[in-house]
Amino acid sequence: MGLDREQIVELLNEKDPQVVSNLFAEAYRIKVETVGEEVYLRGLIEISNICRKNCLYCGIRSDNSAVNRYQLTKDEVLDAAKFAIDAGYGSIVIQGGERHDKAFAKDIRILIKKIKRLSRENPLGITLSLGEQPLEVYEDWFDAGAHRYLLRIETSDNQLYNMIHPSDPIHSFNSRVQALLDLKYTGYQVGTGVMIGLPFQTAEHLADDLLFFREFDIDMCGMGPYIEHSQTPMWSLRTLLLPHEERLALSLKMVALLRLMMPDINIAATTAMQTLHPEGREMAIMAGANVVMPNMTIQQVRKEYKLYENKPGIEDDAAISKSRLEHFLNEKNIPIGWNRWGDSLRFRNR
Image (cartoon, rainbow, N blue to C red; front, side, top):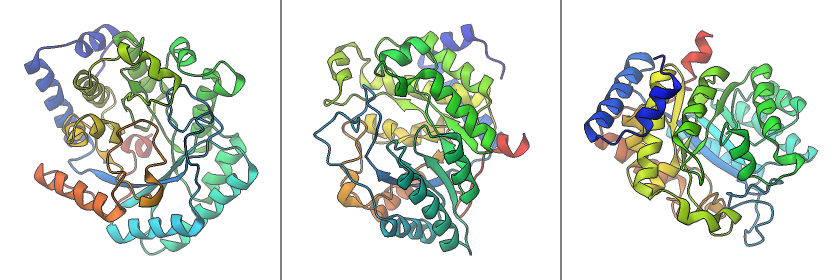
């Protein structure tokens, strides 16, 4: 649907429950018609909370000395990948803080190759979400077998980006955009996303985010509500935030509008939505999302990977996360695309 900026802003500001309900219903209809009714699962492995970045909103920022830092062993990652195979997830996501050391880049390459060998009979799709990297690292990981990469822009507005990041060379808006271009050049299915409900963020900012996604021609998107963390500088701005209910509603509108604007991409129902409402992920699916990422990180370290507070499921293990997700989806009669990669239709057709 060719929505323009003014129309997007109007719908983001819409308060009439019937109009909003109709928006969600139309987005769901378009999703089913274009990419199908099934939801695809990406087993999430939070490989490390060590990060060189110091983003002002993030609980694992490098200056947060209260965090117990960890890195999963290769065996722990491979055990999680084996769980994903047995569970029928079809794909995994390896996510972690941003690191640039050569040892880390090599470890990821080795892991990708081992996961490919482990899943020879039922190959796992591999998505990476490991921050900005040099082009040659992206190429190395792609050659090893990763084929999707998620790098959230967080906001497409340069000024707002600078307000939520330190003012130094490693937190550059232009570097973020260049990294997305490098990922596309390398051949990945490229995903990005934004935080919704940031301090000082307007409906116009969010409309521009959606237009950025369309202009960049992304393949997948993971976006959700901004949720504050008490051990970050942005905690001091919490009184400026929308109430949780309004942040969730705005996030659901963003999902629905993006589905209308880009019908054939993959859109994730993010955990942050579940943080604001127990059925937030399922609400996102009914508004047009078609990907869910059940957590497979070992229970011992889940509590240490807190980008924001009140993250759900940190006391669960992979099996409990799986059973709870299945229960919720079955209750809503939402079918699951078991043992399928669920690649972006937009990417396949490009």
